[in-house]
Length: 357
Image 1 (cartoon, rainbow, N blue to C red):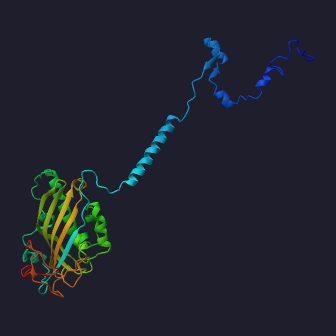
Image 2: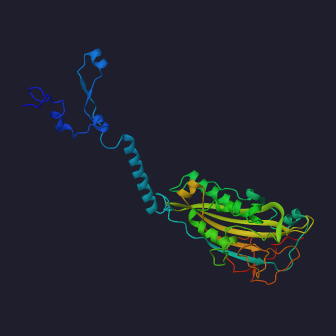
């Protein structure tokens, strides 16, 4: 029987102590409701379309969203790329390029005068009375020869190699800021990256070891001693290109430069004298060098005078100027205007190489 006040059939399920007791432990919180697969239509929706009382909700997406998945993929790609670039040598030659550039081999030979260095205030007269009388001025004295294709390089590639070699020669022997200053960047930017460490060490720690002499890379005078009396430098020489193998071109340059110099920080009326530099340079170009407008300087052979053999010509050239004589002589006379033939580590300017004033 039911208790007092209970209906004959017992307490209703909705009342206290009814069938609801078995669901009292279930908590229908907000997350539970949102996760329900069925959703009841509102009264207005049911009246409008005579729709069922409930509708099925779209399934919830499980796992990562599309944006999160893309972000994870990007991070994975970036991480993999970083590992690959860290393992791969940063200066590894690209496919199709030649072997690493060889270190430059250089020789710098001072040429001493036989007597006093002749001079005059008229630089035009100096040139006219010297073997450089018919030389051209500046870059005009470095004409490009006709370019002919080789077995593995086109006409345009041969022309490019010759042009880069000429550019290097002009910057390293004709730029006033290089000749009488401390500027080296105009020359440095033209070198193959494999040679930059050697170039930098040459200027940081000059050494007469055939590898690290700044005067092997470029022409430069002691600015406390000499300056240009005439910027119209006389030049004469040749350029030749040849294919060494299927991956490289070689350009050989042989030029004589004649500079009019006077003592530094003096009046223009001070007597000037001529200084001669003969440079034989050998360049190598692979296809990557041609594409990037850069060169590998392989051999540099330099004769320069009038210089004193007692002076160190490794870092800078210390020219003997008008009226000066060498402290010590050298072996038999050397003619920097004549091609061919090597000399000892110090030579003497041959008779007739100095102007007659």
